[in-house]
Image (spheres, rainbow, N blue to C red):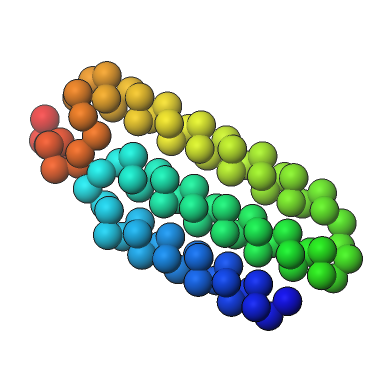
Length: 95
Protein backbone atom coordinates (compact mmCIF):
# COMPACT_ATOMS: atom_id res chain seq x y z
CA UNK A 1 0.00 0.00 0.00
CA UNK A 2 2.80 2.43 0.83
CA UNK A 3 4.42 1.86 -2.55
CA UNK A 4 1.20 2.79 -4.38
CA UNK A 5 0.76 5.87 -2.21
CA UNK A 6 4.31 7.03 -3.00
CA UNK A 7 3.81 6.33 -6.71
CA UNK A 8 0.53 8.25 -6.96
CA UNK A 9 1.89 11.11 -4.85
CA UNK A 10 4.84 11.32 -7.22
CA UNK A 11 2.43 11.32 -10.17
CA UNK A 12 0.41 14.09 -8.52
CA UNK A 13 3.42 16.34 -8.00
CA UNK A 14 4.74 15.68 -11.52
CA UNK A 15 1.34 16.72 -12.86
CA UNK A 16 1.42 19.89 -10.79
CA UNK A 17 4.95 20.64 -11.95
CA UNK A 18 3.98 20.18 -15.60
CA UNK A 19 0.93 22.39 -14.99
CA UNK A 20 3.17 25.15 -13.68
CA UNK A 21 5.77 24.78 -16.41
CA UNK A 22 3.28 24.70 -19.32
CA UNK A 23 1.26 27.73 -18.24
CA UNK A 24 1.42 29.39 -21.68
CA UNK A 25 -0.37 26.66 -23.62
CA UNK A 26 -3.97 25.99 -22.61
CA UNK A 27 -4.26 22.47 -24.06
CA UNK A 28 -1.15 21.28 -22.21
CA UNK A 29 -2.53 22.80 -19.02
CA UNK A 30 -5.76 20.83 -19.47
CA UNK A 31 -3.85 17.62 -20.10
CA UNK A 32 -1.72 18.08 -16.99
CA UNK A 33 -4.87 18.80 -14.94
CA UNK A 34 -6.38 15.56 -16.18
CA UNK A 35 -3.17 13.77 -15.21
CA UNK A 36 -3.48 15.22 -11.70
CA UNK A 37 -7.12 14.11 -11.52
CA UNK A 38 -6.22 10.59 -12.65
CA UNK A 39 -3.51 10.33 -10.02
CA UNK A 40 -5.92 11.57 -7.34
CA UNK A 41 -8.54 9.09 -8.56
CA UNK A 42 -6.15 6.15 -8.37
CA UNK A 43 -4.89 7.24 -4.95
CA UNK A 44 -8.45 7.55 -3.66
CA UNK A 45 -9.46 4.22 -5.18
CA UNK A 46 -6.56 2.32 -3.58
CA UNK A 47 -7.08 4.10 -0.25
CA UNK A 48 -10.77 3.24 -0.12
CA UNK A 49 -10.25 -0.34 -1.26
CA UNK A 50 -7.47 -0.85 1.30
CA UNK A 51 -9.78 0.11 4.17
CA UNK A 52 -12.82 -1.66 2.63
CA UNK A 53 -14.90 1.51 2.43
CA UNK A 54 -17.76 2.03 0.06
CA UNK A 55 -16.67 2.81 -3.51
CA UNK A 56 -19.59 5.15 -4.24
CA UNK A 57 -17.55 8.27 -3.53
CA UNK A 58 -15.08 7.21 -6.24
CA UNK A 59 -17.89 7.30 -8.81
CA UNK A 60 -18.95 10.78 -7.66
CA UNK A 61 -15.33 11.96 -7.93
CA UNK A 62 -15.04 10.44 -11.42
CA UNK A 63 -18.27 12.13 -12.51
CA UNK A 64 -17.08 15.52 -11.29
CA UNK A 65 -13.72 15.10 -13.02
CA UNK A 66 -15.46 14.26 -16.32
CA UNK A 67 -17.56 17.41 -15.94
CA UNK A 68 -14.37 19.40 -15.30
CA UNK A 69 -12.75 17.97 -18.42
CA UNK A 70 -15.79 18.73 -20.58
CA UNK A 71 -15.91 22.30 -19.27
CA UNK A 72 -12.20 22.78 -20.00
CA UNK A 73 -12.58 21.45 -23.53
CA UNK A 74 -15.54 23.73 -24.20
CA UNK A 75 -13.52 26.74 -23.03
CA UNK A 76 -10.66 25.61 -25.27
CA UNK A 77 -12.96 25.31 -28.31
CA UNK A 78 -14.52 28.72 -27.73
CA UNK A 79 -11.09 30.30 -27.25
CA UNK A 80 -9.79 28.78 -30.48
CA UNK A 81 -12.88 29.92 -32.36
CA UNK A 82 -12.59 33.50 -31.16
CA UNK A 83 -8.81 34.00 -31.09
CA UNK A 84 -7.44 31.36 -33.45
CA UNK A 85 -4.97 29.77 -31.01
CA UNK A 86 -4.64 28.72 -27.39
CA UNK A 87 -1.54 30.59 -26.28
CA UNK A 88 -2.04 32.91 -23.33
CA UNK A 89 0.65 35.37 -24.45
CA UNK A 90 -1.39 36.49 -27.48
CA UNK A 91 -4.30 37.66 -25.33
CA UNK A 92 -4.54 41.16 -24.03
CA UNK A 93 -6.51 41.90 -20.88
CA UNK A 94 -7.23 45.45 -22.03
CA UNK A 95 -8.65 44.31 -25.38
